[in-house]
Length: 278
Image (cartoon, rainbow, N blue to C red):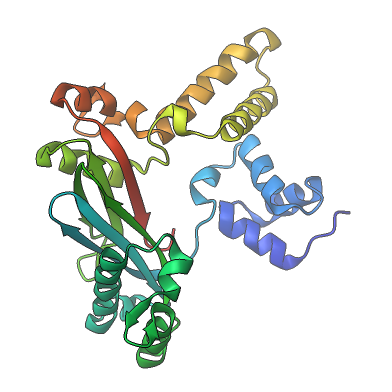
């Protein structure tokens, strides 16, 4: 019997949505390794597993600040409840952090937390004060900052009318085109790509997907002679699902996003997509 606890079973159920017995069997087969158990459930066809990996229950808000057409900041601030998330004071904290990041341009989150937001007060201390004032755990989770010679735009989406934006996208084009920037940002918000292009997908991620695809095909009883073609087809599907330039465009699924950009004479330099709690 593999060495795992009830907490491991609970974690695997939260990650995958699979049934308790399926989770126990997967953990047993994976010798207690949760990550391996997730992979095994994917291979055996548990629905929705890939989409639920890494999900947590955090609430919060996103804030965006655009300046001068060529720079922008997107921040995520988390809290425990949606009651606090939709409060004016909480949203003010998020907006203040966005303004600070825009001005300070910290290298990463650690640098942002250590930087001075007020005389003698670091961002971490500022967030700690928000913890005390709002009565909940408040976390400055992440930020994205684009600044350069390109054109920066954003799209913010409310999943509920009484909550602040829960999905935010920051995009940078190589030249100004507000309409295309908005369309592409909305597409990214809806389709949640993880990478810009196939070339940006790490080789080990593609190899892992190839391995999972082969194991899944074997589990389904596909003939040996057809495996290579089936596996490559599924890897191609993985690329089209995760690389934005390969995706079918939201407003015209007969064209890829790359085709839409080409027709407009612009390039998508980079993007960031945040969903609160994800």
